[in-house]
Image (cartoon, rainbow, N blue to C red; front, side, top):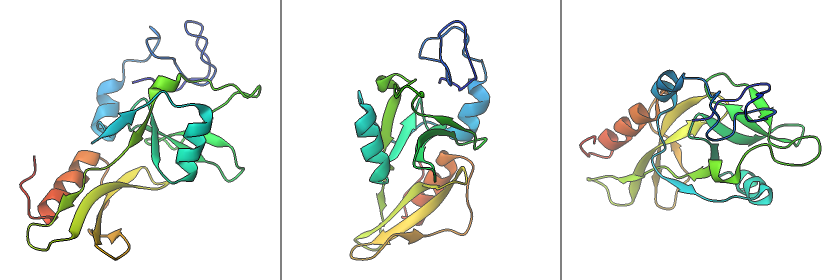
Length: 172
């Protein structure tokens, strides 16, 4: 997974390493423990316009895995946000060009688990916006989603396991 940095003489990334850069730090083990891998991502060659449209539609647009999300800053700029530190980096350079490869972006779609005891009731793990944590959400058909568990989790896999248990399923 690529990790942001200020500058990199190897790959020329202004705000982040490009895929395959030999200077990418070897801190993936630590990051994987915090960020996990996506439940289901749709890898796309996303254009800048598609990324912005997906963020505006409140979809989870990830960069290089779940550790970094694209968010819309209060200033209206689109930023790549580190889930673990909260640091933000511009999605585009001052000249309007994207500093990241389009293939590095994906849309995260959580796995939903239907309750074994009540048809139409679903549980899933979802990100707590702006807090770098995961929560368990439930939704019955015809109703708005709501938080289903009173704790937040630092790992997606932990929240996903609780969602499965609440749905009456054996955690995988």
